[in-house]
Length: 594
Ligand code: AGP
Image (cartoon, rainbow, N blue to C red; front, side, top):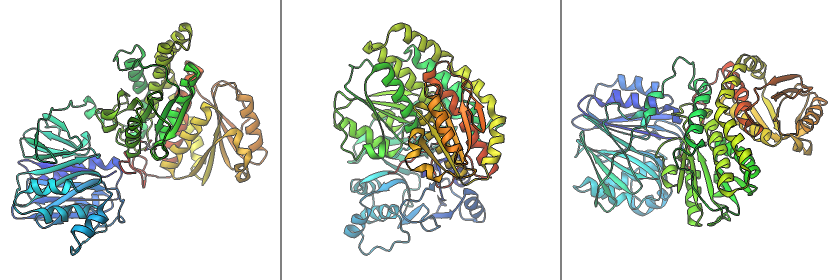
């Protein structure tokens, strides 16, 4: 998603802005730009493509010297990726960058800016023209008047040539942080905040901040001054380095044992006392997107097995517009690594509108979803940089296992012997995940063949199907090979027509008593020419290739060990194909627009 950076200090802003944009690259983008106030005016440079293009262009400029500036990485929503649509955008004395979507920009343009000349196709440019239109001699008033007209999501950083000591920030729905030390920095997430910052502020919805070198003053949209507490720096800032791995994704795959261990440790004995004591509900909803949704599919099986409460798993984009049958007796669990996914945030709000208790299973501390949930379970995966999630997904599984055990305990739906065995198994699970990493070389060899094909299929039953869905997403999002995940028993109802000689089919055989059925499905596709690679723990199969995964400490937790070879398969396939593994095309680490 778009990234915002701002600098207000005593040294040249441009190098910090470029470096800050590089730290935001992992969010995904297709163009970038910076603007610097150089003592006379605000000068801007913006380029389609990689930040290296922008940095080269800035180097060729001799007028971009100044200590106040803003920058932006753009993930195109309104208007294609090109230089003119890139941010910053300028109008009169104002220059602005934006993360989010202004949903009423067309109406505002027609009503307030009918004669205005636009140089881009973006919704953002409407905002800077509106500010300029409202401006006479007070920046804050012009910005506040404009902010009150905007609908949608917006994090804005704004500079004005009449007030070159200040960066103005506005926040609604999209995240914005401010770091204050002997210089001030503004950023969409903590990775780009200056390491010299001594105080950190996380802006809340409906706030405007006036940020000078040494302080930030906060207002509401009516310009009432707001007292603002500082936030805790997350200790994970230092983790965002590769530590010798070629890609962040591989590093994060190998960090999974620790991510799971820390998450389990935090909740197994309910040490953080954040696992809520809620009444036994009629039904539970799990709502999420992408890999978090796939974790939810596993969570459903675990929670239903231990509590006998029906669990519905929905993608957030469907849930939020489906008029969901949620109420005070149907808690809603929203899973999100970033805690900023627009659809998942909207799902929380929708659930609360209907009176449902909301739980956030979130990885980024104090992110929007965490702050808006009634209860939050932080996964302890640490900062995850690669767009394709791995360790955060595994930590989500661990949190869901702990939550399922907790619910069974407080509702008395499972006997204590069983629950104590599960707790014991969960406490040792990270050891098995570490062992599972030992299959890397085998998966690399399989990946070498897989890298040459254009299609692949993943099939499974029960937890195996949830794993097939996640494995398929991993492979397609970083290798760009078209994949489909199918419930193995469903394949014969149509899709089997696509199986032909040499088609690659990965059969995820989980230890759930359905192994014989999976063998039948392997036979079905083999009979039609497929090359079948079975992923199984101990069970023998008649597949062309069998990958024996390490058995988890309990069958219910098998997703945590069986996903490891599938993640490594995706990683090495993408590597053989020369793909941009940590920053796949078209993707963003946090999808903050719907
Ligand atoms: C997973 O590898 C993808 N990057 C994507 O599907 C991701 O899981 C999804 O966008 C949800 O993100 P969140 O967990 O931050 O809400």
